[in-house]
Length: 228
Image (cartoon, rainbow, N blue to C red; front, side):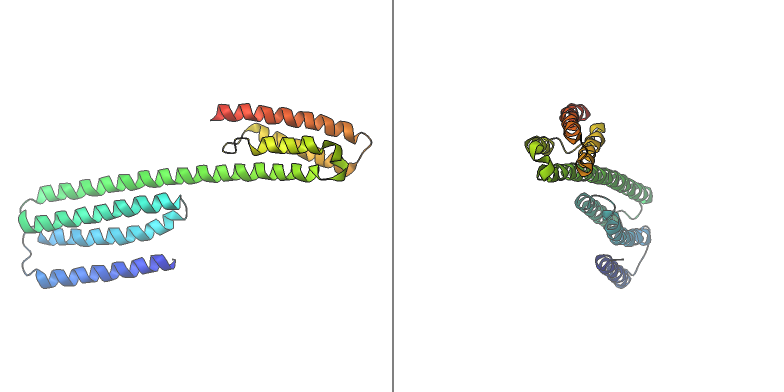
């Protein structure tokens, strides 16, 4: 449990104890719904503070900004509405037990559904962002490999072509992953192997791989558009 969660937990315990003391001091008679409504107030405070602790845990597994902002609003809204409803029923509607129970159930159900939807959306956004970041890092890695080849003395004659291929990848759509990405990486690996081996037909192999590389980059552009 991190410091924020510990602070929230301590604050929650203090708030609950304070509410109990105030309730015992201010309420002498507990007829009708008073006891149930007072328990609902305590429940609201418990849900609010335990929900904040849960939010800290969930934020680490989802998109933090969305999770925190959504759950803070929903938990605060549920607690405030529930406390206001409880106070109103204590003051004016002591005999309306069915109405009180119905409102309590509806408030809790709506809040729970909203929280589940928010967490699901937040997790989906996080996964999408992580995939996009992975794609960006993958393409950046291929660009870096091409730039290294471009400054290799053995590839001096092909330096402009290698840099041009790198620029094409730089301006490609980084938000999607397509089958051509693996093929492009494999083609760059082939060039790297050809340069390392320095065989007699190295130039022919590099030329063929460069043609293949440019073809794959062009195909990638088409595939990326289709994916979007």
